[in-house]
Image (tube, rainbow, N blue to C red; front, side, top):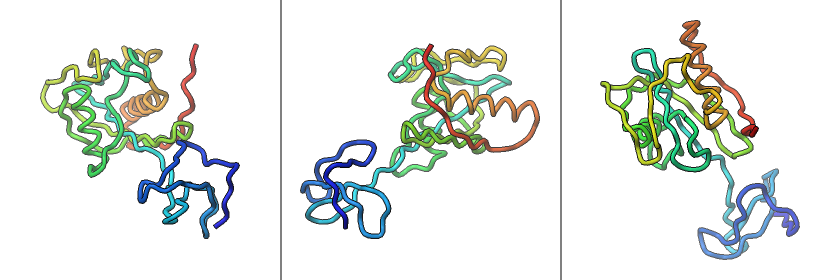
Length: 193
């Protein structure tokens, strides 16, 4: 193992081993090609992996359900219901849970709509399409408003994140062309005016 005390891996700085509590060093483990945080005592390698974010484009009677964010980042902007995946749940279950938490909406998942890399944020976003079960939806704790928008009325300049915009546009493309496809793309940073 090659130790380097001057260079740090990208991402979150880690100081102590979650396995034994000893000091971490920056090293390139044998057989690896990247610098990692490695425990100086038990040799546990602490990998940095991207976070999974899931969302659901919910349709109901030709309209799309959006939530106005109550929390940062991007408070007061509109978004597709979504958030971070938790341990011990499937990606579809995470999308349904997030949709209920943000919009008090129960959905039937129809399938994956988009997979979008958000490399600068160390995330991967997976968007599903789902249909609203019944007519019930509301304002969850992380939202200040929820609304069904006709496609022509979507507030494009007020959508919180580029990945949400990309997934919404792909959904509208699928509707217009009846071409069943999954978008794979990479989202850039938010452009501030």
